[in-house]
Length: 69
Image (cartoon, rainbow, N blue to C red; front, top):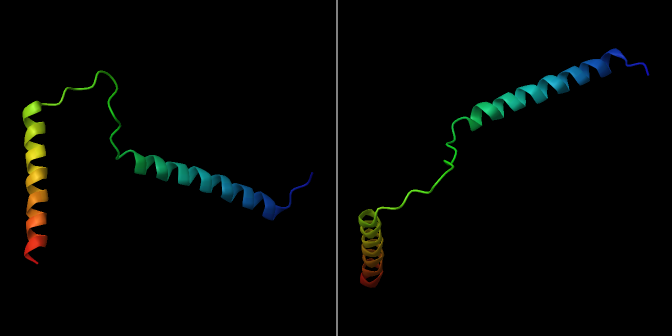
C-alpha cells in the first residue's frame, strides 16, 4: 500500500482538523455550569409563594389588557 503525497497531506489535514474542532468544543463547553450531584436543596416556601403570586398577577394583568382592547 503506497500512499502518494496528496493522500498523506489529506490525512494530516483531517487529523489536525479533528483535533482543532475538539479543542474548540471543549473551550465552548467550559462556560456551561454542570448540575451539582448530591441531595437536592429544599425550596424556600416563602420565595416559592412569592413567585406564584407574581406569576398570577402577571397573568391577571395580561387578561385585563386583552379585555380593554
